[in-house]
Length: 135
Length: 386
Ligand code: SF4
Ligand code: SF4
Image 1 (tube, rainbow over the protein chains, first blue to last red):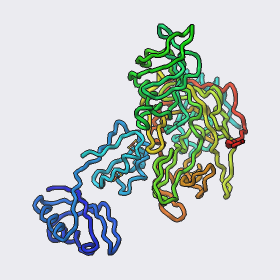
Image 2 (image 1 turned 45 degrees about the vertical axis):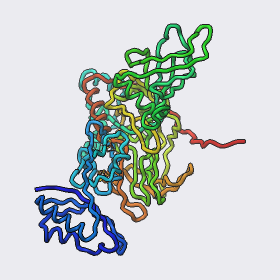
Image 3 (image 1 turned 135 degrees about the vertical axis):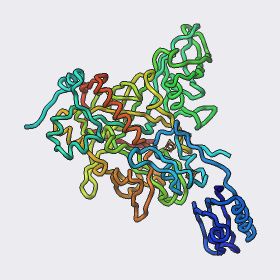
Image 4 (image 1 turned 180 degrees about the vertical axis):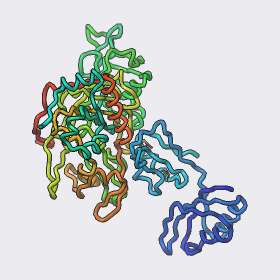
């Protein structure tokens, strides 16, 4: 079982194609939508997390490329240095995907890596330099 | 019967290990259950805490004299300029001054944190030279052990209550209240609410000149009202009382502080600031004091202010309470907006706990103020007179 985060960029020509449906149905992949931004008839962007068999993921991505959708693999990673973090929460409201939150009981920062799209917004918001993006 | 206690009585109990101490959070359910009078009878001290960016901070340092001696007129610590216009080897390093070589990525706050952590700091100083202080330049290294005094002296800390910052414009803005996303994409606030020192004694019944406090992990003191001090409350349109203009000037021995409670911070696109941890113990002298320390997040209101407006008086977008803010989302003009605290509630809680433990162990006694703060102060703008 393999896990990959990908960004699909659609153009006006292929924006209507039911890509995620095909990935699930035809390639038997587990698909989690992390972020979706579309302007109907103009195109859009989709950030997904895919889980499945290595071969199936490769074939699925080939299929997506074939229909003209640009495919980018997210190889970067966000690193949170818990020792530097003071739980100030400055990063929380800047994260659009809800990766970052303050625990309702302890008020300490929680980092839900699974949902992260490595946009880097939190890196500039952290006053302590506790978050970094690595390549 | 109304309860009355003196500082002496409470200190006597602390010394005997008999004082009953709780934090400003723990007191809430106690008062709800027992009522103000009964709680005031049973509880002796309530501890508060805050840990957030406090820009008006800095340290007074005495370097000691070199041989031959120099009257330092310009001083840099790790390339951050400190103010040296006092005597020969005294200087004041301000938290927000930025490095002349590294710009905004390093500033006075970092020098302070590095000093506290025991790291070596490069000192460079220039002088015109005099007959008694012939030397004109020096470059050397200092640590907190090598210098005479290092005293944290912060002219304005522990703001009673602060605005919620929001941005109604179409562009992302970088402020001392953090990054504000366009079109009200987020809202940042900066007080520990029900744990915050000056919201627990909003009328300064117990806090004044001479109050002993927890400052950056060491014992410190309130030395004066903070700059811009403005203690008068105001009323919102729907009649809620809001306290917000109180501030403290505080002092403490930097050499005894810990980087756990004093940290440098960089607000991107704005500059450098110092995160300061402060805890103030509130002696329960009577039931009036108890009534105020029982305050809850849902009763403390603050104003939402549009920071995209580049003038002194920014437009208000209404009021919210700290319960709403702490839940992580507020409604502003019909929009659901995520919130960020900037001031660490987890740390504020840790400080209030730590102070409580010190008092319980008899290591921290209460100091009665030697002078009360004024009841009124005008908040003056700067006029441009030509
Ligand atoms: S990089 Fe930061 S802001 Fe962006 S999604 Fe990940 S956690 Fe959220
Ligand atoms: S902004 Fe930085 S220090 Fe503050 S909670 Fe987030 S990671 Fe921690």
